[in-house]
Length: 377
Image 1 (cartoon, rainbow, N blue to C red):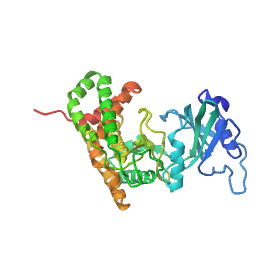
Image 2 (image 1 turned 90 degrees about the vertical axis):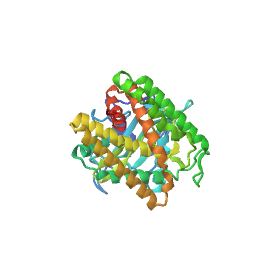
Image 3 (image 1 turned 135 degrees about the vertical axis):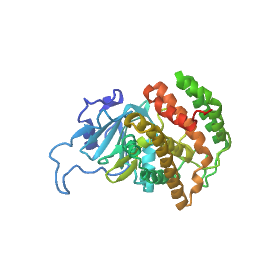
């Protein structure tokens, strides 16, 4: 297991995940350190039963797009090995601890985080969570909903996002930008505007061909859409998810669960404390991306997909607002920030496509062309 600090886990390392779970039952020796959040489940067949051998391991299969490498152990626990390991501090362990403390249940149960400590510092090796039976991520189940023109799910998404933000809004230790009363700093607006402007410039630079020419022709309009970010932020800065899209929402046997609190892998040095509108905008744009996927992969007519996306996002936002109002926390969402954050998100999708996944460019470009239709004579 020491070698996992230097070489990423691969499919050849069968047994390591089950061995880790066995080791977590006792004192873990140096150079490892463990942070425990909830007791691990037993792998026995009954209260007094004994498991006949070690629990079986399997991965999620090559069809699942994941940055790290996850192993399902005994169909009860998931061990996510970070490949490569990540220097601490890392956002997930502290978010896990807080969500357990405040009783937020709409996520895969957090069990433990394994790190390695040596003279150079501490490195996060693995995260251990519960396995959610029959789980599918939103790039599967939500595309099914788009193809079938169903939007009833959107209210559940809005409630889930609001409940998550209500839980994260009590996160301690905001670095001077927010107080318990929700006071904010004018500097937050400037930082958001700078970041969004940079994303637009990069998207313009990296997007070529006909798409690039089309985008350049809308550059002035896009810049105008970003202007609200230059004003001081008046809504509270809270600990946000940071990468909230439908792919992070699992639909499983017992409902919905939000996962993956690692932050946005495409944004370096993103502030953990931001307006809730950042997450809400990304979740809303991901519904637009689902519509584009349904057009490309399922043959859904573009007009029908656009209509579905509009109704789904409206229902999601209505449910989100309603949940905040129920808890007397409507002030968490600044509506004026949604559009500029959505524009920034589409720019980031174009940057991601250019740098990592060129075939994905059709999705953000399809969304932008829907928002800015061609002028008709």
